[in-house]
Length: 331
Image (cartoon, rainbow, N blue to C red):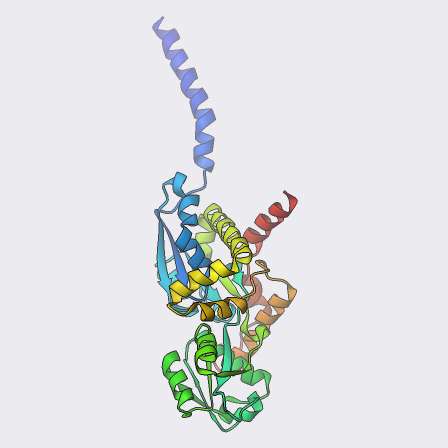
């Protein structure tokens, strides 16, 4: 009787192990917490933070979500590298620059195609084009996406940086220098651009979406490899928030107005500049990314040995977003 009982217990244990253990062994791992940045230049992140949709997605997993404010793309990449965040918001230019510097990152989803930056002049300025700026002072903030856009715009127009005088100033100080006419132009980002246009009558003389690039959700290669299901689920929630933002532009403007502490008309103008129509980079997006590299090399920001095609191909990973969006189209 005892031998029969032992055999019965052994059989039950064997059945349990064979049925339960495979699921435990193949279960996707979860990090201790999910650390995600939110940024003023990533409006979808502001929506997600307000409504708590990421928290809802991972609630059944008991996975806490921690939000970390990011002031800019370079800080977003720094946060990834130092382990402050797992998923960060970056611009196309910053992503390429940091990838070329050896940072092991992947751009996995486009959160927007915005007007990152523009050239502004005063309402009564005689300057009407980039060519008019030769020999004149331009205020910009080094290390920002706006500054890199300035370099790309000059390069695209056939103007050398030595043909102008670039004055290094933080955004608000640069705008003040413009208003008192100590500089002929200021290059900066929204919402500063829209606010200056509406409230001070500043005139935009140049912006170009192809030079600005898109906004990317970026992760480290190790996080994407270790937690692919988490990355996919974050993108799924981002995709829902992107579609919500397209359907509710006025509500999006209210959220942005509160987050940026600007008037609703300013927020509405900024939102009107943001294209949320595509979440996966197309052929033109990839081509524009590759065009960034020669400019960065010319400005001594990258080594001459940098290879545009290899850099961008290694940076962009559309597998997560493409699978999700294609499934949605099928369903």
